[in-house]
Image (cartoon, rainbow, N blue to C red; front, side):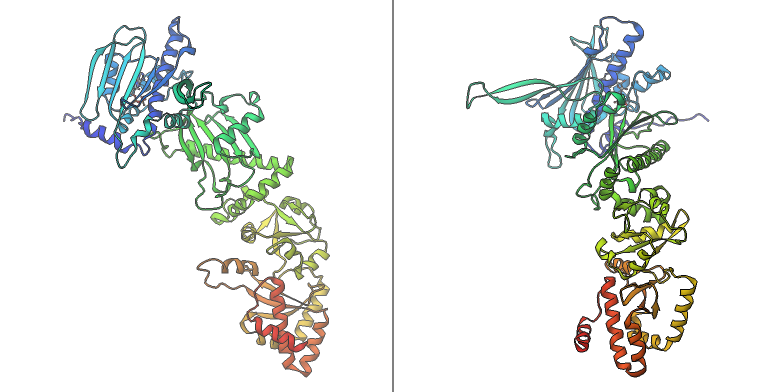
Amino acid sequence: MAKKQFKAESKKLLDMMINSIYTNKDIFLRELISNASDALDKLYYRSLSDNESGLSRDDFKIQIKIDKENRTLTISDNGCGMSKEELESNLGTIAKSGSLDFKSGLEGKSEVEIIGQFGVGFYSAFMVSDTVTVVSRVHGAEEAYQWESSGADGYTIKETEKSEPGTVITLKIKEKTEEFDYDKYLEQYTIEDIVKKYSDYIRYPIMMDMTESKLKEGSEDEYETVVTPTQLNSMVPLWRKNKNEITEEEYEEFYKAKFYDYEKPLLTVHSKTEGQVTYDALLFVPSHAPFDYYTKGYEKGLQLYSNGVLIMDKCADLLPDYFSFVKGLVDSADLTLNISRETLQQDHILKIIAKNLEKKIKSELEKMMKNKREDYETFYKAFGLQLKYGVYADYGMNKDVLQDLLMFWSSSEKKLVTLKEYVSRMKEEQKAIYFACGETNDKIDMLPQADAVKEKGYEILYCTDDVDEFALQMLREYDGKSFMNICADKLDLDTDEEKEELKKENEDTKELRDFMKETLGDSVSEVVFTNKLKNYPVCLTSEGMLSLEMEKVLASMPNSNGMKAKIALEINRDHPIAAKLKSLFETDKETVKKYTKILYAQGCLIGGKTIENPAEFSELVSELM
Ligand code: ADP
């Protein structure tokens, strides 16, 4: 059977193109400028191969003109131009890309970096214009032609005059409506902004006459209009230059201007990668967290360029959450662009780049930790929290990437230390990496449990952020050593002999301990005598995974369902209070009850837990006094 051809309703198609491909009207200018740049590239390429004389790349330029009175915006180039047939086929056929044909004809000779490929960009002009007029003259030809269209109704082509070769595109800008202010496209500052944002690195000068009203020289109230031809784009992307040609200051200025920071970056990473995927990356780590960094409003992402043209301002897929503080950009010609060139086709190239960047960022941070410790501490103060969240997030999936970037305050070094450093200093018989949690380093210093650990000469890591303990629990161990909260019941510092003695003591005092436990009801799961306290009479310890600190964190979250840590009241067996309790238990059980309540309240106070019944506590204390 003979196949029938699909017929496209071109009016509808054009309407669809104009109104649904793009989400952002501004990009019409990016598309027209990219076309002009392609036209210049083609002419340049031809001049190379034809040995045409009299053509100098220095003369190539793109010119933008605003005519407010007539509501027109004009984009001209002195590139290759289009013949009558080319106007017909390139602009009369939707999704026909003369540029793609041209590129295919080059067979991979890639000195030219042609941007166009889909054959739809031109039509984006209709998003903002009532009528689009193209006047073009092919380089080397005498005659010129005018193509004109008001959108869906079709187009006309007629012969016309044009003194120079090249193309002039005139947009009759739409009238302002309630929904959209088209007038802004007749403002020189809007145009300047859009060019800077999307087309800053087009490799030909984009010129516009900037008009300014200035006080006349020598006059105090008379103004004159001054017109200055201005180049809007900076042309050379900093990241395309050779590293050794770029000064520190240039990087800094670039970072500050591009990412709106008043301080210079802590770290700059500039890399060129060739191979599986070819791309340039320029990354920065800020020296301080942006004000909204730890809020939902913060958007991570890198700028994404394709051949120097901005495709996405914040490409989130390029950065893992735990490195969301990194600013910068990636430029690659290998990306598979979506037809609107506003987004990408989800593609594996992006994944490869993201994976490489992650490795690069990690190794650069490690280098900074090793060689510029002070800088790293500054970095860690700003973004360490994010790394710790990263360890905890996704069920610890990324802990291996992150564990060596973590730092904690050390009880013995009195500064931030890494897990690697901690382990390298561990005593031979030391079983675990000890840590303690509290609001501040000072408060942790005063924890009764800390004394015994310090006395053994063991270092303690101080956890003062809510997420710390969750992160350490997610890590479970580092270099084969497990983590141990010094406030946990199974903190095991005693020798076998000491253990035996303590066991016997607890057996002998079972009645007393049960009596005390009953007095406290559900507040504790048991009362025991302990060796681990040196100066303090009591402490509270938690059993199992949920510590006192975590209980506090969870209690502050909505839907915590009142999760409770399982708490033991531990009494220092060497403290006079221990002997006192034992003797009172024989003679005066009522007083033992009161003592028990007071001791429990003390444990709460020292451990940073609120006392359930402060009035009763103060009454009991006064009574005994
Ligand atoms: P694309 O740029 O993706 O190819 P467009 O719809 O933007 O698609 O343009 C269609 C074609 O029209 C281009 O491929 C090019 O051949 C031609 N063209 C557009 N603008 C110009 C111009 N300023 N000079 C020369 N040719 C142009």
